Every structure is written in structure tokens, then in C-alpha cells.
Image 1: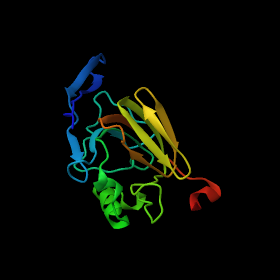
Image 2: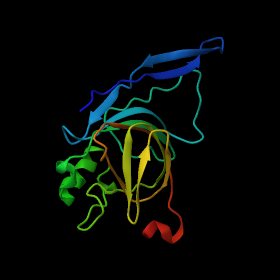
Image 3: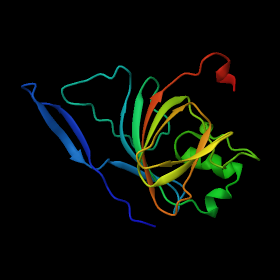
Image 4: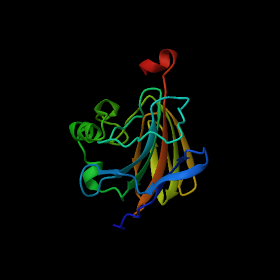
Length: 190
């Protein structure tokens, strides 16, 4: 497996004169490998607690102590995930094992794994997600479709049931921007 490249999280703000400055310039403070070797690594970059986001002269520290899959209620989240090539240990997960993986991600209820599902890590969140593939490629699996998403492609997921399968043999890195959402009408019962 390729070694993970680190990246910088550059946070801007204002000095006491109201002039723009760099507040911090370092890698994200929270990264977490999910499921042991062969699992994805989550890099938690930033989140907001509300929209519109409150903008202070010095941004509030947003670092969390543990991984939480969805954004805060009425908030947003940006994370980067490195997906190594998928192995048999992922493809052969039981429903209980899949639920445990999502529990490790802070949202066991997101798992929609069941016998006959297109992938054992199918999941759904009540969010609007923008996924930007930074490097590599990955297969996005939906209930009734799948497609290969490559570097430079952008996925907009509107609360869809999905999973990610890296069948490429190389690492895939995706930046995700998650926005808290709300299912409407009868759709929330699907």
C-alpha cells in the first residue's frame, strides 16, 4: 500500500486591527483508521455548528476528540478520507461487522447493510454531501447503479444509500463536504 501523504489545514482569521492573518497552518489534529489495516483513514478537517456559519475574528477551535460521521445538527463538516484498495476482509463483512464499523465512525444507525445488499458497507445519512476525488479512483455503489469516480470528478449525494469500493489497486483520496439536511415528505420513510 502507498504511504499516506499528509496535507495542511490552513485556517485564516483577523488580527486586532481587523487585517487578515493565518491563525494556524498544520495537518488536521484528528485522523483515525477505521477497521484496522486495509480500512479507510479519516482526516477530520473542520466543522461548523450552524448555518449560516458564525464568523469571528479568530475562528472557534473546532477540533473534536473522536470521529463523528455526520455533521452537527444544522452544521457542516469537511473531511478527507483515504481509501486503500478494497480486500476480501471488506467484501465479506457480516451485517453485524458492518454496523460495528459505522459505530467506530460515530453513527451506527447509518448502516443499511443487509443480506443481498449491493455492498456490505451500504449506508445513508440525512445530509447533502459533496465528494471531490483528489487522487485515484473509486467505485460509488448505489441501490440500483454503480459508477467509477476518478480524480477531478465531483459527486453530489442527496441522502442516497451508498457505499465506496476501491477496486483500483491504488489509494484513493476524497474530500467530503457534508451539510446537515432533512428528508422531506414521504421520502423520509424510504
